[in-house]
Length: 71
Image 1 (cartoon, rainbow, N blue to C red):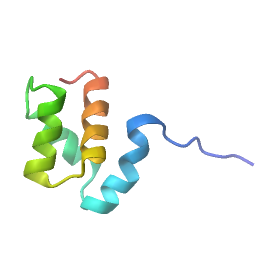
Image 2 (cartoon, one colour; image 1 turned 30 degrees about the horizontal axis):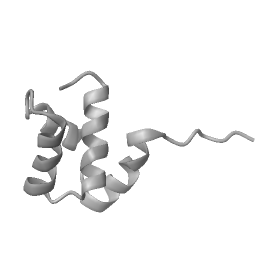
Image 3 (tube, rainbow, N blue to C red; image 1 turned 90 degrees about the vertical axis):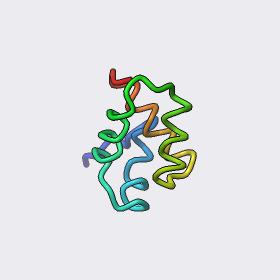
């Protein structure tokens, strides 16, 4: 019996984000790419105000985006 490892950290939110907002995670990461060198809090605020994401979902996307080396 094989079991797939469940995503941990920010990626654990991705299935819910995709289902709730009907966009793939790549869409949100591309938007964050376009924010340039904005700070974490500014990127979270951008997703919340401009795209109506909840705080937890926005924070998870920004944390993942920044951890993968994009700022």
